[in-house]
Figure 1 (tube, rainbow, N blue to C red):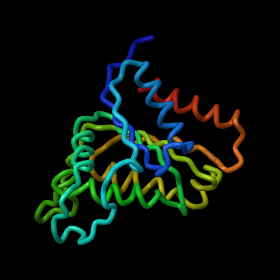
Figure 2 (figure 1 turned 60 degrees about the vertical axis):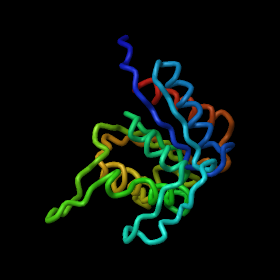
Figure 3 (figure 1 turned 120 degrees about the vertical axis):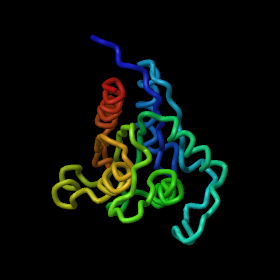
Amino acid sequence: MTKTTPKRILILLGHPSSDSFCAALADAYAATARSEGHTVRELRLGQLDFDPILHEGYRQVQPLEADLLAVQEAISWAEHLVFAYPIWWGGAPALLKGFIDRVFLPGYAFKYRPGKAFPAQLLLGRTAQLLVTMDTPPWYFRWVYHMPGIHQLRKTTLEFCGIKPVRVASFGPILNATEPQRARWLEQAKALARRL
C-alpha cells in the first residue's frame, strides 16, 4: 500500500463547546492525520476572540481581530480544510456562520470582477471534509430537508471560493446514540483521515 503525500491540514471545530461530540470527531481526525504523517493545525471557534457580526456588510471594512488574521493565514497555509460542526435548526451554529461572514471576505476568499456574474475564486487548490453531526436521521435530513446546513457550507461558501472537492460525512442521530455507535462514528472519522 502506497503512503499518501503529506498534506497541510487545518481542522476547524465549529461547535462552540470543546467537549462536544463534534470535538471528539475533530480530535479523532486530527490524531489519525498526524499518525499518517500529515501536518495538522487545529482551531476551536469557541476559543477565538472575535465579533461574529459583520455590522455593515461589505459597505465598509470591519478590521479583523488578531485571531481572525491568524485564521486567514492558517487557511492560506492549508491544503485541506476540515470543518466539524453540528446542524442546529437545519443550519450551522451562529458562531460558525459569523466566523464565515468575518473570514471569507472579498479580496481574501473571492474577488468581484466588473462585468462578470461570478467572482474570481481565490482559495483554489484546496480540498475540504465536512464532519457534520445532527439529531435528525441523516437520510431524512438529506431526502426530506435537502441538507440546507450542508449545502450552505459546501456549495455556497467553500466551492464558491474555489475549494473542491468538498466531501461530507454525516453522523446521527446524536441524541440517544449509544457508546458503541459513537465509537463506530469516531472510527469512521479516523478512516476518512487515513484515506487522504
